[in-house]
Image (cartoon, rainbow, N blue to C red; front, side, top):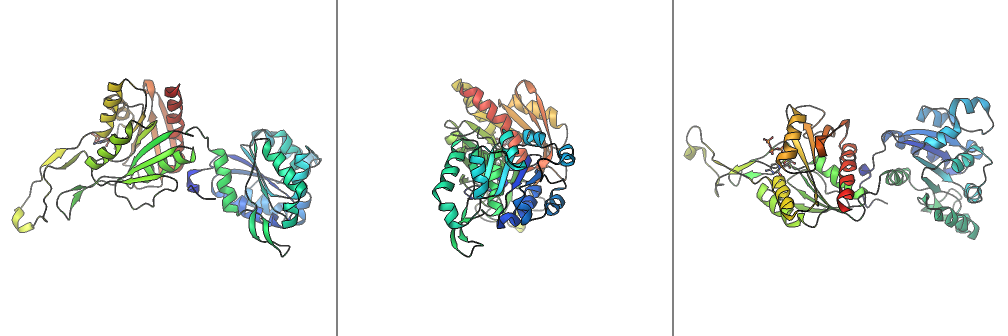
Length: 417
Ligand code: CTP
């Protein structure tokens, strides 16, 4: 696993049913429950009778904060948990560990315990994490059952891993690492609505040199743009990230183009814009540069008491893309800009939407401590066609990135029609 960054698949507010089968790896379900909760998912655990031989319901109840479903015919549990509703409302069902017995019962459509019943009711995607003895896993009947289940299209597999097994053998059959199951779960919950599309994202500040030692810059950390690049890749896009200087690691699965100045950023973006379906300008491009950058360090003694720097205006890259698209009479690329404001965010976002000729403007208040520059969270207002508004309350930048892409991907598919 891991060709993309797991942060690109946020799980906040998603309803996950964690089904636990009866195998020694059941103890790892506790760790998985913890990771799912940590990622913000709402987790309900269901255990088979055999699973309870390996792990107590109390463990999962304590971790998830909800009663654990164990018995199909227990009226008390039924009224408390409402299994059918649980199955209907789930966004995803994970079965970990999926034992040979569970796979066989699932493949033959049986509903002889709570978990298999729930699996027949749910319409949500199902993620199976098998774990068993190496010979059991390679048995033709087990393989046949797995093929049958995966062939249905809605049932997916993570693992099993190759390694040391509790039966003191080595080989395939080990439960996938809980972190890998978490990532696979996230992938299933993120829409693939940018599959096959080309997306260019800009991020970070630009540095405008005054002399070889000094530059003009701003507080942008690049976090929002990098989150957008990650999220677009998670949704299946071919992503190019044009980034100004940042301290961030290059996102996985994304082509990175590094620039320093606004002029370099403009060249990198405009040469690639025509082949994009979507351009998201999250970079905080400097509006001005030094009219003439000194080639040698400016010395205090020669500058006089209060030196004056003469500035020249940088091109507005986003407005340029808007004009170029209008001249071509094209609908693509869809153009998304940001409005970094310290007040009147919505009004300014609306004004910039028109002034720059783009399709969406994401307004954020950079004067707040929990939003805007250099934070891990953001709270934005998205202004769209007809100046319609959508507010995204405080969330991680990865989550905000997905909400922005929800709106942008819809515009891309409308423009493609
Ligand atoms: N932008 C751009 N080129 C510039 C300046 C900004 O492409 N020279 C883009 C930004 O990437 C962002 C949007 O325009 O998507 C708005 O940037 P912002 O700094 O909020 O606005 P400005 O146009 O610079 O206006 P002002 O500074 O007056 O608010």
